[in-house]
Structures are given as C-alpha cells and as structure tokens.
Length: 376
Image (cartoon, rainbow, N blue to C red; front, side, top):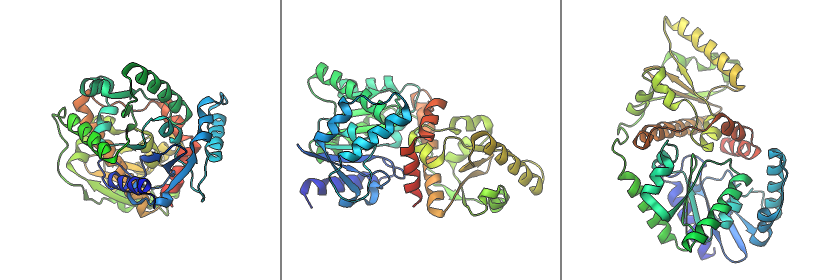
C-alpha cells in the first residue's frame, strides 16, 4: 500500500472510531497528489475503512465540475454532476465517490479530514455559530452559512476559498459549515491532529454547561412491548428503548421536546428522518396503546413515513427500524441530536434546519443511496 494511502486509512479510522467526531456513516477523508485524488466512497464507514473503501479519480477530469454550466433544475443538475464524477473515476469497483469530492479537490492541501464533531456542531447548529467562530478562530478559519449540499455548496465554498486566499495569502485549513460540520486540511497528518485538538480545546473553553455524565440505560414500557402492533408497517420492525439524564432533560414535557423535535444536519435526516414523535400517554394501558396508535397514524399521514424515534413523556426514547443495526444507528444519531441541542445553549440556543433545507435532503438521490448503504 502506498504510504500516503496508508496514512489516509489510519487517520480515517482514528476519527471514525471516535464517536465524538463521527456518528454512523458520517464524514469523509481524502488524499491528493498532482494527478489523482483518493476519497472515501459514499456509504463506507470511516471506522473500518481500508484501501478498497476509497475511490480514485482524475483531478484533471474533475476540473470540469468547476467550469461546466449545469441545469437550473436541482434534480437534473445533481444527476449531471454525478455523471461527471463517475466519468472521472480511474479506480476499479462499484463504489461511488463522496458527493463532496469536488469540494475536497479545491481545498489546496494534500490531506482533508471532514467530520461532524458533537462539540463543533454544538456551535455550527447554534444561533450564534458564526459570531462564535469569528471570536474563537478569527482569520484562521472560514465559516460557510448553511448551503444545500452537492454542487451548490461546492460553488459557494469555491468562491469563499478564492476570496479568503486573496485576502490572507494562503488557503484556509479550517472550514466550518453551518448545520453540517468542519473540514480540516493540511499536507501532514500531524498537523491535522493538532488543528483538531486546537478546535476542540477552544470550544471547550466556551462551554459553561457541560453534558450530563450519566450513561444511557435500557428501559421498557407497554408501548415498546407492543410496537409491532402500533402500525401495520411496524410488524417486522425492531425497537429498543433508552433513558438517561440527558434524555429526561428533553422529555419532561412537550415544551422541553421542542428543542429536539427536528433535525440539525443532513446526517440526522439520513439516519433518523427529519421529525420525531413525542407521546403523552394517559389512562389505562389499552388506552395508551390506542392513543399511541392514533398518533403514529397521524404522523404517517402528515409526513408520509413512520417515525423512527418515539419519545415517551417522562419515560425515555424508543428507536424503531428494520433491524438491530439500524435501530442502534437511529438511537446513536438521535442521542447526538440531544447532545448538540443541550450544548448549543452555551452558544445562544439551537438552530435547526429549515423546512426547505430538510425537503432538499429528504428527496435527494445521494442521501437515499446513503440510507440504503447504511441498512445493508
């Protein structure tokens, strides 16, 4: 294995195994030389990635994405970009390159490590995210307001990198993306680690209300035990219930849950969908089952899909999915949503994605592909 690719695999696994940096299949990494770029394949987990988990593309052929005029229709445009990315592939196999390949290409450093750290996203998904970034990092970093992923984000970042480089004389090594995560870039892995350590250290210095320290534990309830009877489509699904001090902070009542009832980032939508169901249950057990059944049916009628997260007032949260692996992913991602929301109070409070931003992600072929990969 080429030494650079070996280092790329090692740094990918390092951050991929750390749940404070990468949740589920999120994040991506790359290495480039003069002719080629190696980037994580879409849907491949950083935690266990090896050399075969990367796609190699021609940098010369990738340049067309920057100069080409694409369709004004969003669906058609993204299909055209996907075709050009595919045309630039020089490696063998059926892996798809990350949708952020072109973005990695224009960052003027050999190594790029893009992650979604919980503490970084506590800032990125907060009301005061931009001002906090400027206060903590000044001209050391670039802040990009939320932009739909794919080609539109690529062109936005491309323009901002040019402006930054012109102003400061060198390309940014830290690029923060609102409601998304952070890109850290360097020509050495050692500096990648140093930059990440600096980012987390500075954010830690601003956190006056840290997360509750209690670990989550399993809980059961009549709703959990009856989950497969609550909707016909749940008949073959699996469910797991969790509770913790952090979870109870958000499920005290419906008002508390407003700070956790929708998505912060595209990854939240990919793995948990965009909305979560809060259940206030009263009466006898049969009455509670009846009420939950009605609310789930109403949710399905509203959104066109079943909730993957059920929050039961005062009890805990239930993850519901097709198999154990997918349920654990749902609970992992939703717990991270709670952590981000809790920590965002240190930075002005939570800032969720808007309905139009959610709609774009929910209907995007790229993210539907990632959902499919996550379940396989």
